[in-house]
Image (cartoon, rainbow over all chains, first blue to last red; front, side, top):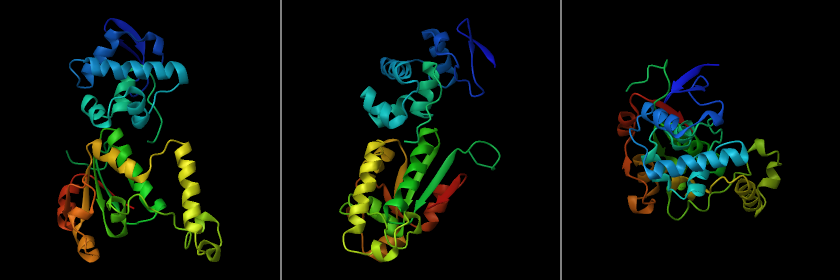
Length: 105
Length: 159
């Protein structure tokens, strides 16, 4: 399994760069993944969504797809796409250090 | 950026040409999924597919119970009064259980995701429809030529 050094921490990642061990995640790791994905600075709204992702993963073992993410976080679909232009569920999960959600809707 | 067929897909143009429940959902799911993956997506509604964005009709889309062998229901039974309504209701309940949005809800969500929604000019002419008959999320009524211009450099999915 590939290992990456992010914010001074060694983390295990899959082929797409998603962390395979959510416990290795730190806020510094999140910020560095975000920068690599084109988000220079994580705002409070980004963090809100990222925290929802981590909480859902801890509770259910998987992060929500876009529609559920909108419902659970209370952030509207349009804003989710503004915050995470390359795909809200996918990007937020990557930044949150959890596997890519597998929902279709 | 142009798709030469070797790299990841960056843009899709989905055509929805049928007006049944099972004719509309797959195209919506393909377009929504494309946006969720960060791809550019446009949706084109043509022929009976226009019902998916028709103000008065998009909340009344029915499952085809005649001429639909996948349903495993005898054709004569599928044609009985009320059968399509009952089957549609049954299917909608199952979808609600799985948290799959209704067609109007899903179309709205796709528009909010930044995908473009367009009506087909030949079809609106044929059915005597104007932009006012279609939901506000529809950006424009365009010709097939304009569709191809917009689809350039991406993949076209016809449903």
